[in-house]
Length: 148
Image (cartoon, rainbow, N blue to C red; front, side, top):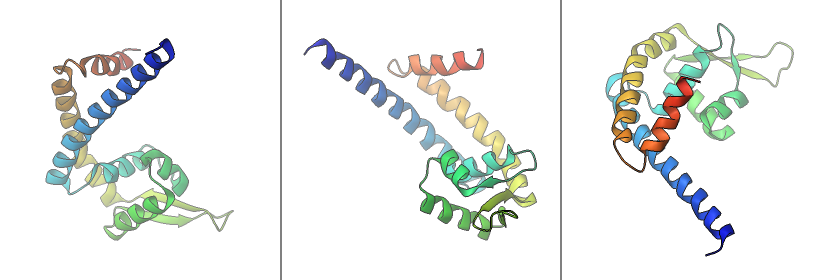
């Protein structure tokens, strides 16, 4: 294996390690959020993203980016959350093709109830991952971002 091949393998191993960390955290969050709030991780992500808009709303394309979903998957997700009364859609006043999404009061209440579960589960999952030798460097890297 040449130097170029070694670099490719190192990046591939890094990606596999990152995917393993992501998968373990997402599994823990999915179980905890479903049990406590009947929310999936991606539903929580949408509510959280909308809550960070400080009274504003987001276009569907922005939500798709925030959730890493396709446009059609984002539309289906928004439909489900709208059916549950957790968010609402608003037509853009200056662009009739534009649709904004906004958190409703019940959506905000559910998010506030789910947030401590999310945060505690995330902390516990990262603590557990930090004790796995392969994942420990990534967990430390995430911790260092807090202090930067």
